[in-house]
Image 1 (tube, rainbow, N blue to C red):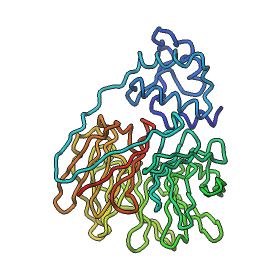
Image 2: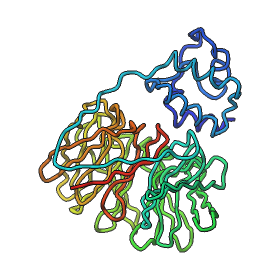
Image 3: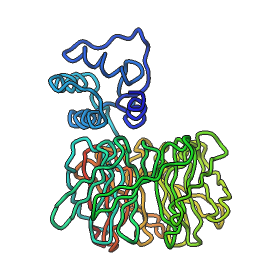
Image 4: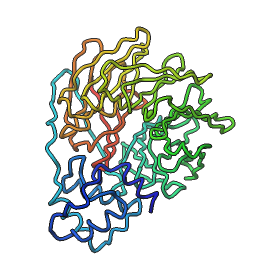
Length: 410
């Protein structure tokens, strides 16, 4: 129960911070279950510090709870849902601001098989497939965009909590076991899963994995553990680097053209690099103290691009000059820019807080934006990446339980 409690508290803003012990619950059918069952794992008596949900959103949240073992009585599920819907509806969000432009895109998406999977990260593979991590369903999934055929692969540990994922040259799919304290490898041909446990129990939450050139090492961030890890593929040896500042929260990761490892520190206004051989850490302060860089991308000139989650900006940092630059996101300051990637030196990212989520294109040469509302709503697109043929983007649409494909028509 303790482990499940930590997991639930970690990923769902629906069940948030503690309230006064004297605060009473709203009257209504379902009060008895919510006020007793839910507080067996969650602190306090108030939910939805993150803003509440639509009826569909609460359905997804409850499905996620069931997936990770919350003992919700089947005959009371509807009572619980209706009680939450009635008392904690979705709060107003900034409207997505669509900016017209010359580029056309086409959206397509697929609901994943298990309700409440919480698709976290997507992966485009050379065969044209789209993979995703079903974080709360404890699965990896694959869809063939040509046929819509889907398959889910169960993982070995019951609470692995897969987060980021990457493929290797042999076709294996590697994932970060964010709740299970390991990185794992799935062989899609057999369904076999191999886990590589962290050598230090403090390294509890591998986050974003990435192979270096030649797949000599698998690198990964560990957000709450405040570390970055490197696993030598030849030996399986894992080395961990702890950030000098508490709660730096290493998050997304990229490599520059020289093979240097770059990542942002979500807990502060900083980017950082690691020498791939010596593991020497260098930190770079961003200009605004309120900046919280969430994800990271890189253009061919080695300029780093980040989404400023807290302030609603797109930012860039040039390691060669040490200069940073930023642009307000189209829909405003409370739109929580999140997933970001680069395709043909054009920056693409998603506003996770606008309604619906907004897909944004930014041309660094002209400094012009173009944007599109995501037809399914998006449900917070936490990560995205280009297709391997360079014709589009793949998205993980967590809150609406979908994975998506954006075809770009320049």
